[in-house]
Length: 222
Image (cartoon, rainbow, N blue to C red; front, side, top):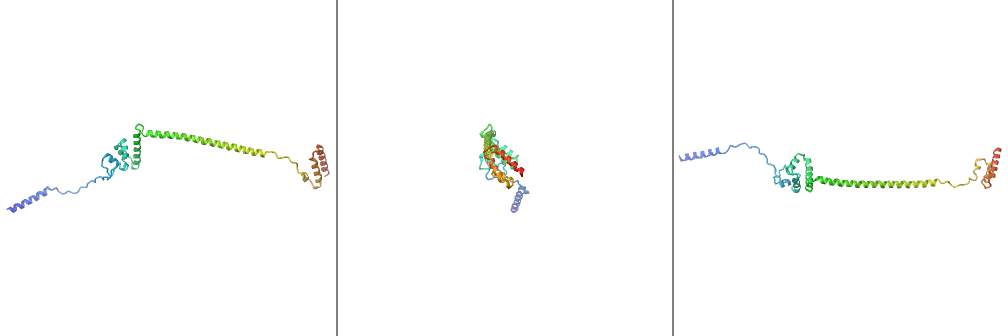
């Protein structure tokens, strides 16, 4: 009887242990946890939060430059920066972060005007440089005009001197000795040579009149 009671007690314990253990259920798919970056970005480090693999701020605020995020965070706030970046495409986010950091630095330097003060100073410098450029261009035009005027005067004096030298009359000279002899035949050469010498001497008008009389007599005889 004792052995039978012992075996019955053992069977009852095994049965009770099987009924207590929960039935095995099929394995349900588990959601993967977000990957944790080993070195958090500057934004997450300043905000003291876990930097996930898909952190919006990580590509633009590296861990070695915390001042960049601190400056933008003081002016705009981390939530506004995240919201603004999520509304932009990824190709424009880098320029947007640079603009926000620049504006934040300008706002910290000049709380009243911010970037407007820097823009005003740059526009003032541009106006001064444009005025200096206009003066320099006016001086260049004036010098070019003076140079052209000087060249025109030099050319005028040169042309005038050339014209005055070319317009002076040549010196007077007596006609050649055989000027009249070439116009007639050889039989009258001695006559015309004699009368040419007779014509160009200093005897007066009587010699000229006698010359024309002899010439007329010769023509009628021919």
